[in-house]
Image 1 (cartoon, rainbow, N blue to C red):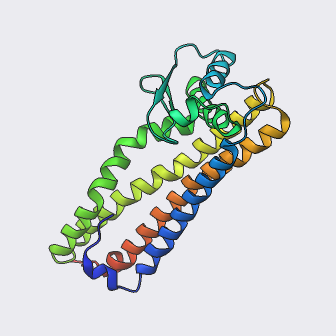
Image 2: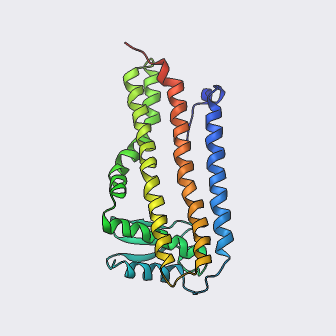
Image 3: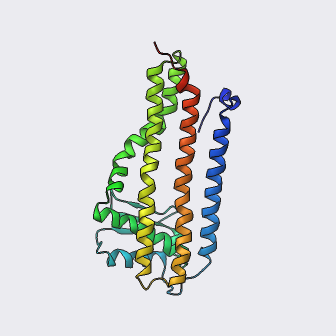
Length: 235
């Protein structure tokens, strides 16, 4: 994220450093955890794609298409076009990690089927969050240019807060999808008990990336409030 050069010398820049460390630590942890259990082949020998197909069928979901997409850990469920997109490292692998990731995305499909409220709320917040993350800083800096105009700056801060709200709503959605995935795998022939324990570690590591993202955004918002929120013109 772009910051004017003068912001690099203010005392609150340590908040940016803390956020960066948190993000890097979470990313490193999820990557190392996935690599570790991606080297453990499942005893069932099913691939991520096969596991996803089994789970969807078992859940009575017949309108979701499973697709293979490029990239690594780019797996996602799209409720708009009813597609479950598995990255190549997940779709073709028979590892415990791959099956766990596939099951997690199936958890989102199940959420969609039962109309899980936080998921619907998150979907509704997407346009607002995207707009807020894109326009918040330009709006705040416009307020600074116009003599610390408190109205413009407030609009910018609330726009930035919208992105944080979206990330906070995302947390229960992701944790719930992981819980659903673990429950499904625990009662299926896809993985044994000790393999499900490994999946829990993979999904917990993945969930931490969302926690880290929310913490990082909160620290950025706090920094903006310290820099601009307390010095607004009251005219």
